[in-house]
Length: 107
Image (cartoon, rainbow, N blue to C red):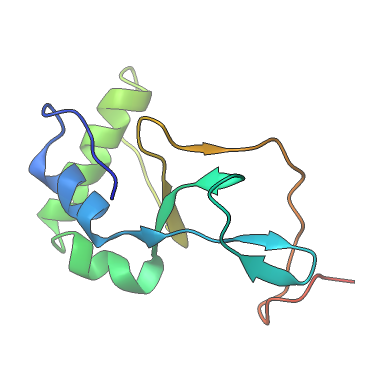
């Protein structure tokens, strides 16, 4: 279970509550190992349940913009998967391995 400071808005907390443990690729396998990565994720298909369509989704983006790039006037996002790392979350240094749609490494 991820937790964020009390100052996190309800829209951010809805995202955290909808997240599931996030695996990672190790060779041709997809694995969970909390010694290597502690994170959660929301896949694109789940995001509609985690955020309100329309204005609620824009509220989340506006909060992300304000936290990460306050001088920007807007943020546009196309999410495939949202990775969420809590205050103690981490992913050990690694090299990403591109994968095809079927989950196997690209040749």
